[in-house]
Length: 239
Image (tube, rainbow, N blue to C red; front, top):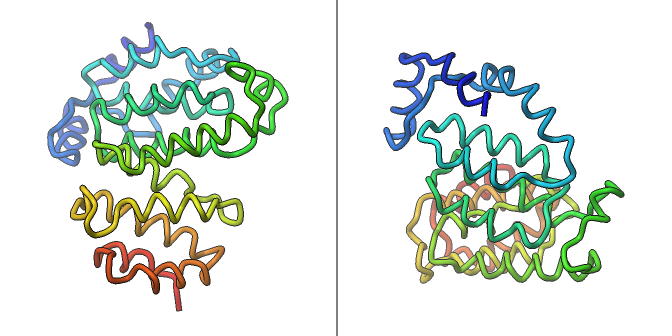
């Protein structure tokens, strides 16, 4: 792919070193700042997003390149294509979450699960359903899978389940939100995991902006089983 060489031609070792240090030196970087990456990839993404099908082979090709910048590019592409995602893509999203895992990519994958949960507004996208499921039938399968993710053996997958309704406001499925959080309270496998407790706090804090009463009631009911970090984050906007 020409985009790979295009990125690498703009290498900035100083920026790359700083980016790697920020990510605890887990990944290599080219050294592109976000505005630079977006400008360099603008035409590439525009061309690739003309299709009505996700190019998964390309996504994997980018994901397995050593530089983190290419995982970010893959995420940018998937977000542009999110309206075409189907239930059958959930296993691929999960695989992305457990491959080269860290918060920077996983929190982008949230947006893909979010897109699967919300009704498709685009007629062209609605017509692309797998196995001829009705939209409601596909949604039920998506909900079931997210609930399964909430107790997955990998905590990044659990984090996806917890935070996949961020910014939903009044469209939040409170039954789903309650379920995925309850699977990750004190006594659960990752009850002491920072990224799980932070995710719980973020999910509740975000929903408190539109439904503070529900969040207050949830905290009252579950306070003794919640980590202090989750409680602090969740209560940030509550009076």
